[in-house]
Amino acid sequence: MHTLKTAITFLAFLVLGIASAFSLVYIYKLISNKPSAVVEQTPIKVIADLPSYLEPKVESVNSHIPESELRDRSISFSLAIAKVSPSVVNVYAQLQNRNDTVNIYGSGVIMSQDGYVLTNNHVVADATDFAITLVDGTVYRARLIGRDTLTDLAVLKIISNNYATLKPITNVNTNNVKVGDVVIALGNPLNLGQSATMGIISGVGRSTVDKVGYQDLIQTDVALNMGNSGGALIDIEGNLIGINTLIVNQAYGQQVSGLGFAVPTNEALGIMNQIIQKGYAEHPYVGIQTTLMTDVNNINYLVVSYIDPDGPAYKAGVRLGDRVISLNGKPLSQVNEFFSRISSLPLGSNIVLRVNRQGTTLQFNVQLSSISDK
Image 1 (cartoon, rainbow, N blue to C red):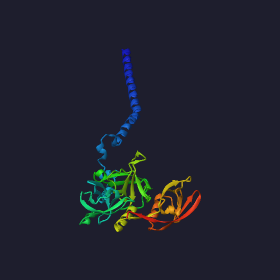
Image 2: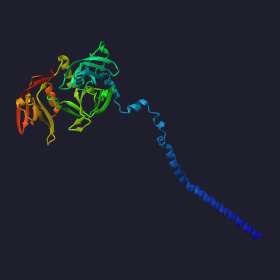
Image 3: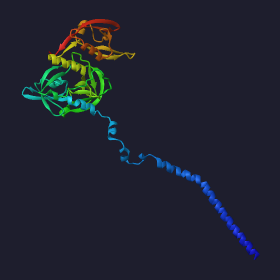
Image 4: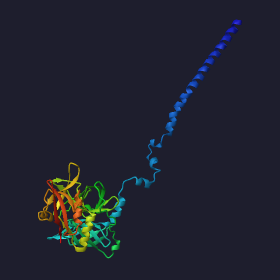
């Protein structure tokens, strides 16, 4: 009996011992696993705090951005175009060629409230019948005031009983034009109606190959086509910087693109005013063209690249290849600078031209003549 009690007591303590051991192990696991539980919750908290843009819901991204703000973030020249558009017109000319009627179309710019329109000489050609269409579709008759083949400019006048409805150009930029500036051409390409194309200024002071040596054209890579002639070249603020005049599609037997030219507004305005006053334009004529060169020290200089054997400069002693040092005592470093100084002088003026010829400095007194379409 005593042995049985001893066995039962032993078993009871054994069970209690085992239970205590399990309890200690359980408590130890709880204690040891508590930090790891916190670590496991941390990523869950971070994921919950991630921005909502990870969710593929586009509407939730833009829903809080005002439409006006979205438009401000885009690039648009619509305001500049809208400012100038009412001043740019389609020009239509009609002429009789033997037994045929020839219709010519182009563009123009209303320059004054009383209806004077600048366009290209090759648009009006030898026509005697003219019509002008505004961007809103209004059609006017027009008459030719005069033209200048040397700059390819012409002036028409709208025939109307109410000039107050016209919208002449009001913003003109005559001297702040740089290579790389973004520009826009407005005109009537292929007679499709008023259209806008964009590009940059590729060069300034470009020359034509005519006798007068007109050398102040603006070169652009704007897309120009038949019908753009006479239209507006504007900057991104809607300022008129030139009248589109020349498109080069082929040179040296090769097809070319991105070569368009415009007469700067300061020159165009001077020609227009002369035509309005006299019916034609006169130009101071020196009889040379120059080309911009750069020496080994990266200094620009001008070289006489064309000389008219019947012109004033040749008669005074200037020769092909002379390096131009100064005009009336002022140095020159740009082609358009030379032309601008000549064109601003009165007809018949005397100029002092200093040149370098094979290391020798020479000075010539040249009396400017005049050339015109009179």
